[in-house]
Amino acid sequence: MAVASIPNQDPRIYVEDTDLDLPKVLDNRTRYLYFKKVAQGGTCVISSCFDMHLRRTIAYKALRKELADDLAEQKRFVREARVTAMLQHPNTIPTYELGRDGSRHVYFTMKLVHGRTLRAILDDCMKQNSHNVSHYSLQRLIYILSQTGHALHYAHNHGVIHRDIKPENILIGSYGEVLVLDWGMAKVWSKDPDKVHTETFSKFKRGNPISADGILQTELQNLHGTPPYVSPEQLEREPNLDHTTDVYSFGALLYEILSLTRMIPGDTVNQVLDFIRNNEIASPVEKTELELPEELVNLCMRCVDRDPANRPQSLENIITRLENWLNLKETSEMAGN
Image (cartoon, rainbow, N blue to C red; front, side, top):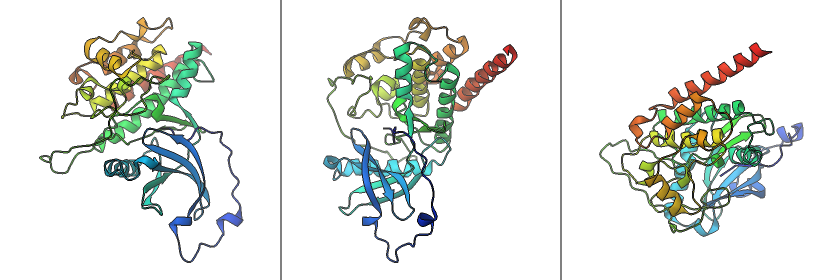
């Protein structure tokens, strides 16, 4: 879920705001005002609002009204807030506060980032079948992906796997910053290795159609993630899931960036799941007439190998290869000039 994709207007900072007296008695019921919805997903709503204490506009995330009293959804929501807050990295969203509103419903606040999702950028490229649309060359798209990898590598080092990496969850801010969003499906482990961790999330019917952009708006029972980007072992609900499931999803993003087509075809959830189970993934070069770098194609196919043991075992290795390619491209272009 994107935080915001509205035009950025840099606000002036005035002394009347910086020197305004703080109320003697602070009341959170009147701290956040002037709400405006900017995004909505299957379970949550994100609004922009004005923080009266710090005199700034922020993002305010809350469960949808029909889910606000659902204990399982509340538990997942609180986990998302805390995971997002604990992952303090340049490629994650800063989190400000976790609390309850006047109705005792949970919410958390975070930085409001103006920009575009990778989904919107790729859609533009797909329409023109080109890697050079609105200043988004293949090099810049690979740079965005490498920054995504830095966030995931950082999370993996902290014992967190995202489980829902997709173009919608990567935001490119108005200053070029790359942010990995929506840690609501993140998996964390108990301090006790013998403790079995169970999760109960919402359900939906397997026959549901996929939306026009290929993304499901609701979750599959016991499947955490979005089927067109989900790994085979995540699909099969394997209990020993590890960070290589994010490597697979990362590879699916690389595949889509290279070929400008979705890696997994299908118009319904069942079609997507059946393809993942029963079909081999064709190379990106078979999906496009664009000239693709062989080293990136080979890396992509390693990432989306059906067997997790055959994938790169660390995002660090993948990032290094992406950035080496970027450096060689930059050196080659400089030499050409």
